[in-house]
Length: 262
Image (cartoon, rainbow, N blue to C red; front, side, top):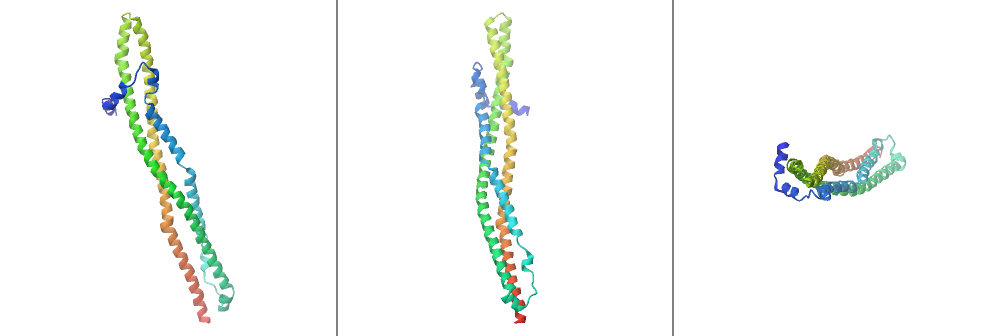
């Protein structure tokens, strides 16, 4: 890590950044590294503003609702009934079959309503995943920008600490009163630069911690989208197919049971 930091300090970009700060201007020091640090804050705010927890929760609720609808399927609806032929044709059997058909047609309609709502949320979640990918790229960019500013700040601090301040101290020791005033200002500038380096290091830590958070949000959305796809690509078609078969078998049983008596 130390070797990498030393190498970074020799990079042209870092040297240019260090030359652009005026240590005699307190505002210049205070605003050193302001742009990438503000970038971290702004795009973190964008995550909070654009990530709708409500959408994810709504999709989860809708999937749970879908499960409850499918739980309405009752095997006993299709159990064999011990009734006579006339009872089946003219009595309760016919009514039961009508009730069963009405019940499962209603279930089909309810499933379609849930499907429409979940698809709307799926589109939003896909957009969120794309946005998070963009934010992840921005986060990496800001992290490396902050590294450059930290390295540039350390270059400035080292120059003040090892060169300018000792030279001014030597002039003060030789009786130069004006050098004493400049020494005081330069020492104050060094403290401000060191504080600014600390602030930028903290911004780097925020960026470092934000990466896994973005990744966690991405994985959560992708998993939910996967569940939605599984539900509507596999589960529901299989359920509907099984439902059709169950109704058809019920009808066949009623007919088959009636034929011997006929």
